[in-house]
Length: 315
Image (cartoon, rainbow, N blue to C red; front, top):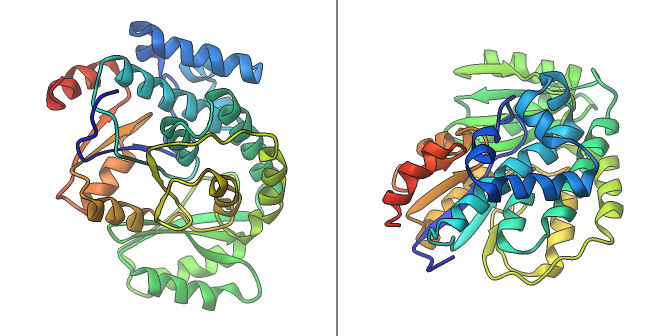
């Protein structure tokens, strides 16, 4: 890739998946198909069949969702690279997307990344029996107010902010009944909207501690190579370029909140002028427009997106 002109690449997390994702890229660009081949060889799993044709229930199983989204995201990245687009000065990813960002930075190999996130998904699903955990999105309250109502709602159970998404959106996570109590408090406390999420586990809270410990073991034999592009981490919302810190931060990420709004503000402070979302959906571009309208946003998940994006980048 060429020079780095104030551009950041960002990568989506779980929830952005849909049946059919990646198909058009693979049909048009051989480099996208090569990503799927490498990922499938690493996993022994037919990701193309799962992504392109479903079934939806299979794609939505956390252990399948995570490598599937990563493969589509890296496929989009490889297509952009193959067409000579300017390289990023920084990368970031939302939760699972941080692994895609680390692949983009050159810290993780694709085969290692898909194997680790498949295990990560399995561990996260196993950490809490289905139906015992929950998550909810709260819109229109400040983070401090959400944190406070979680403390009141907890009553000895876990409930805490999990995704600090920005634009007045905070996702909470924890034990099912504690989340329900927090939802009621939010509705009575001036929240503009509260949505209970259809998720299979309560991600990014203390209930994920068993998953974090399992992930630490899964990462033990994974090589992290030196990388020259700074990664804005979920846990610290700050720039990391130290290979030795990658694994500890990924382990902590499982139980810690995703500090997305702060991460995007860090990018703005670094001089980022354009953010390109690579992978399925446009969730992150939508969040960024609510956080900082000063940065331009684009996305790449289909061939027509590339046709529009390359002229914008002067390619």
